[in-house]
Structures are given as structure tokens and as C-alpha cells.
Image (cartoon, rainbow, N blue to C red; front, side, top):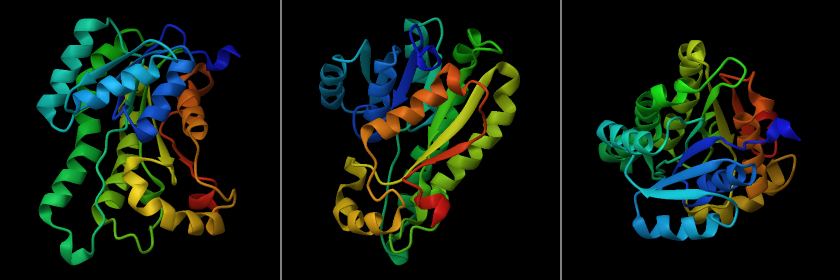
Length: 256
């Protein structure tokens, strides 16, 4: 099935040492790509590199992506090692859940900075490297990780900054899709529902029962579900798709 073959492609996944980022990184590796995963913690990078190396050629980089300067530094690191970058997955993110009166300015700045500003600055910093080898028939790909919390109101979860940031990620995806199409770069977003990850640990068990009642498919997401969506958008199968936000949530956001 060469429609989904990523052999020879180079990918970068931010926040790729755990959770959804690691699910995506593994999927890209198994499809044949060489993958760089990025996280701030050296120990997390070492652990992820050991685990993911069973599936392909992976390099873990302990670098920050939360500021404009950090994005430029990471782009320089990738540019020194590679002549091109085919796939960028902007997955690194922050979450905050608290009552309205406890949602402070620092929380807003931290969440929107990492969830919205960082994908923009990193995409901009890596754009020349991505466009270098991109063609009309084989575009470079940007995949932003949004959330169903940016598609509908997550009732009772009080994720004001997070939900707002993910809605912004979805619209940033559309704006960048329009702007970057002339350079043969597609930009799409995945909006995950509930997947097991460190970010969802505190709410997963409580939400799981409600998810089984609400979502038509009646379960939380699996690593294969997330990997499949990413591989589709990164491969020849998704080469004519840009500006989309794909919910991967068992039907929750689109039917309830």
C-alpha cells in the first residue's frame, strides 16, 4: 500500500516523547519515516529514543519550543543535520483546568504561548527547509494537534485557556493552509478526543464512563487511531488535503 508509505521522508514531532506525540512518532516510524522527537527533558528523550528505536530510525532532541528564539534554535539544529524536512507535527502543548476565578494571566500566557504561538513560530522557522524539497505532487506537511475542546464546549471541565487555544490552533491551521499552499506545503490539524496520556491522567478515569455513554463508538482512543490519522495526512493518500481539522474522537464532536 504505497499510498501510505513514508520511506525516505524526514519528520519532526514536538512533544514526541510521550502521549499523543509518541503515538504519532511511532506511526510515522512504522510507515518508514526517519523521525526527530523533541522534548525539554533529557531523561524523557533518552527513554523515548530507546523505546521508539524498535520501530525505525529516531533521534530525540532535548530542546525547548516555547518561544520564538527556541523555535529558531531548533530549526537551526534540524537544518544542520538535514537538507530537507518533509513532515512537521506541532504537538507540544500545555493544559490548565481551574475555576474561572483561579484562571490567572500567567496560566493564559503559558497555555496560549505553547499551544498557539509555538506552532506558528516553529512552522515559520522551518518553512524554507520544508519547501526546499516539496513539489506539487509531493508537498511538505504540517500537522497541528488541536483538540475537540476547540470544536465544542467541554462542559464542566473549566479549561478556559486550553479550549480557547485549541480553537485558535484550528483557525491558524486554515490561515496557514491558504498562505503556504503556493510553496507546496499542506497544513492540517487533528482534533483528538480522549486518549490516554499524561495530560489526561487526572480526568481520564472520571471522563471514561461519560465518554462511553456519549461517544457513538463507545471507547477512548488508541495509539493506532492517532497514528493512522497522522500517517494519512503525512502520506501520498493525504496529498490533496489542506486546511482541514479532523476530529479523531469516536464521533463525539460531530454527532453529539
